[in-house]
Length: 328
Image 1 (cartoon, rainbow, N blue to C red):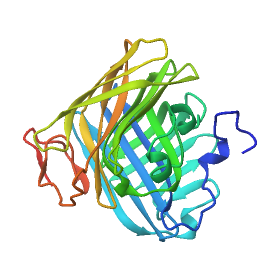
Image 2 (image 1 turned 120 degrees about the horizontal axis):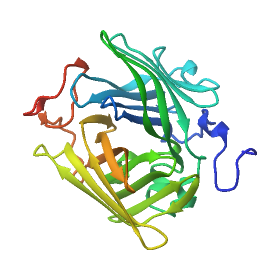
Image 3 (image 1 turned 90 degrees about the vertical axis):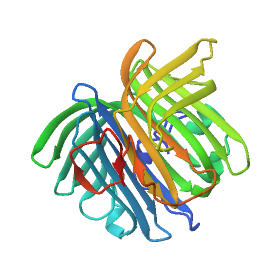
């Protein structure tokens, strides 16, 4: 794209891309956010597989004190109107739009979302920044991530919030084979433009542990080394209450990130179940937010978990987590 600086993607790469003829070709916008002052956040992912004629959508709201909301559908028929010039959709009630910035619009009756996302830094080419990994060819050949500030309106039932918080988002397109990742941890977030970060560790079907990540400090990117992501797992074996992450910077110092989880969002696709732990975090001596995505799929099972302690897989509006776990 002609308007992209070296090492970055262009503004046009936030729009739908031409589709190859491979059945596994996909395109996916992902948005996760948290308002620390009001202790409420959300996760949104829309996944298009045009050659299969279907899409997946997951929209979830989490909060420290309740309520919470979840709308998740797989194998939704994909229409021509869902891949518009400046927007992704999946039916008339869901839109991820680009108008000089990303906007999220959801109209699901009990859940109304109208949020605007302002990026802190350019769209750096992820794989050029972090180096090659097994996922480059099989999960997200074209990929970028950004952090920034989110503002707008959220309504659940009769309650309304004016949101002002931080977010992390990513965009990926190209060939995706979900079965090639057996287990993973992905810790992303920001404390402001002075520090945005993405750390990943995953096991591929090639039997290798991959680690990759970066920080962006006041617009300047830097690759990370020696990444470690330690999840404080709940008894259910899927959800978790906190995460301790660390990595080594180019000057030899270590980045330490301590993440709390107010509640977990759950995303299902093609047999994989990923838990998103969203909440406040401390990094670089400052307070911000993180989302930590965890996949435990080494044996490739697909049974539905009977209970989750710090996450929810229900449908619709719920008043909040049970201290003993939520039946699924």
